[in-house]
Image (cartoon, rainbow, N blue to C red):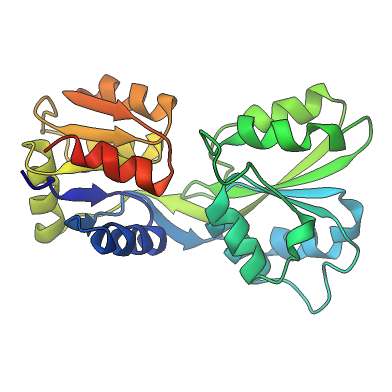
Length: 257
């Protein structure tokens, strides 16, 4: 039996790449971005961060979007001072390379890591942080521009007596569904397609966008245990957690056939 279609819920640019990869592997895939990425409402903190770039021993990026929006304000030769660049996963590391960061300056979990998150990154970089070492965390914000997301790694830096600043490089907004998006979401709700979630925030946004829909008949693949827990809490009837590696995701999606 052929695999059910997969609904990719990442932000639009990343979703398009994942859809292409799944289609190349023979799956039917469609994008339904559940997080909308927009520029930061106030660009001055980003410009100020670049002016102070030499103050930082390391810059931590939560996503490829953080890299792209932060580097859009870079001046020529701005990274010559040589900070370390921390990436939570391979997509973020690729974005750093596209921005001109040399590979030897990037710290990230290994490509075969079982998870790509702050915990996996911290295992790679915690030896770089000691009393007085300053780190800049580049992350997303809400509609008003306030920082949004987990503070786990920031707390670890604090515990190591490091100094850390935060700058919001972009905003993460909820989607607005038209008829086509709503029809695709209903296919997923009724079990005719498999959801792929790489963010608990995406699940929350889906519930807001479809407030009257029950998810008991829905199936989902989650790329982290926390995300799987969020899907179960939302009422998804069948949830499987697997590694974010492409081959593992394809196998997990195909298992719902």
